[in-house]
Amino acid sequence: MAQFRLIFLLILLVSQSESAKTFTKARLQLMWKTFDCSANPSYISQHRCIILEPGKSLITSELNYIKDVIKFNATFKLFMPRRPSRPFQKVIDVNVDICQFAKGIHGHRFMTIVVKAFGKQGSQLKCPHPKGLYIYPNINIAENLPAFLPETDFKIEMNFITTDTHLFNTSLTGFLFDPIKKKSKTI
Ligand SMILES: *[C@@H]1O[C@H](CO)[C@@H](O)[C@H](O)[C@H]1NC(C)=O
Ligand SMILES: *[C@@H]1O[C@H](CO)[C@@H](O)[C@H](O)[C@H]1NC(C)=O
Image 1 (cartoon, rainbow, N blue to C red):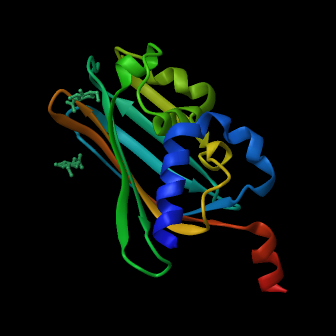
Image 2 (image 1 turned 30 degrees about the vertical axis):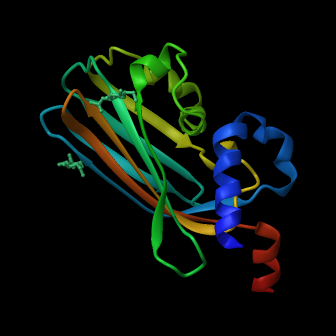
């Protein structure tokens, strides 16, 4: 049953993420637990990756690029347990050319959710990517997630790469929960 639900979820995620807005009533809330980043010092001199209080639903990231980046790919991996309290398994693994994506050439629906989450700062994902300080405040992934996702723990690994070099690796863990249920549990 859980497997079926997962497959169903993935099909919806890939095919219908655009219509997610019509399901807003049942929206789950997201809480981040960890946000780890590591940068390649030949491209990035300083970086900050933080989970914002209160609520821990937003994240902020700052990067100081000391070199221009001409080619820019992002790999995105999503891990979820197939059943509650089971080990994580990879359910999405995509590699997207950010330069093509920024031009509006279709990449992957799931990446559209991620790029939307960057909001106005999404335009900072343009190519070529000139050196300088990039600030991505209040990234809201939850707002753009489809509402039919199950309550679950999950992990995201997103790496930014150029030609053959890793620029920036991020790893996030968090969970989706129903705020109404959570409230009644704590009473
Ligand atoms: C990023 O991850 C890749 C693959 O896991 C690894 O080879 C690379 O050294 C990492 N780079 C940084 C800057 O952490
Ligand atoms: C970048 O993404 C494109 C499109 O998915 C892919 O064809 C290409 O091999 C990727 N390049 C790297 C360096 O991963």
